[in-house]
Image (spheres, rainbow, N blue to C red):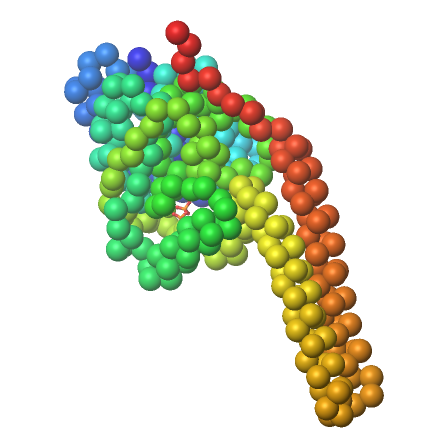
Length: 310
Ligand code: UDP
Ligand code: MG
């Protein structure tokens, strides 16, 4: 039984010398608890521009259980993860993804492996508290989860990309051919037997976040728009609301007109503005509904996964 720990690395030369020994240490712990299990660390270099790759090469020479995969250019965190997951299928029975900065507690890994061995296909790492993140990061993340949910996206609260997946689960994930990846939502959508493991989130070991605000916002928007067409539907609601306002404006305009308070032309203008606005929005919303359907079709997601046959 082989379990791989998959680490996406983008300019992480500062943290890898600490990260790798710590992960190997955890693997040794796992092996001593479960003698049948072998462990490996796979480092995916996501087109780093610093000394990350030479470092990975050196680490893999000095540790038999360390392997490297180098992407030709910076493809982004999610793509780096997908590349590693795809490669893992050839050998690993299960794969655990974790960030290079070990902000996610690697101490939760033995428990994840235990859950996998007792039959779970996916084990989600869920952060207990975000006390070590900055106030801003904490609030923005919280707002993000709320917003995604309100907009009809389905994600597991406080779960990022620290999770274990069985080979079977990775196989399911690989059937999603879409380009816009939001793995935490896609994996959640697979189903299969799963459980969660709680852990405390730490500070970044060294270096700085590779997700500046700009990237975080675009990631949030990606997540939202890959999972829900509700924003499109809101346009129709808004359009109908405006038409209702137009009706109110008609009554108001006519009354003012009858009481002789209205300037000539004001009533018709007032009413048309709201009505035309409402009509345009409704029409756009209807087009949006079709675009939503096209969107679902072009993603070509699998319709279902079979869990068991008897
Ligand atoms: N990462 C990557 N490609 C990128 C950006 C980030 O592979 O283009 C990796 C990075 O090396 C780290 C993980 O994704 O292992 C998460 O990044 P980071 O810790 O900077 O994000 P944060 O924890 O601040 O959200
Ligand atoms: Mg981090």
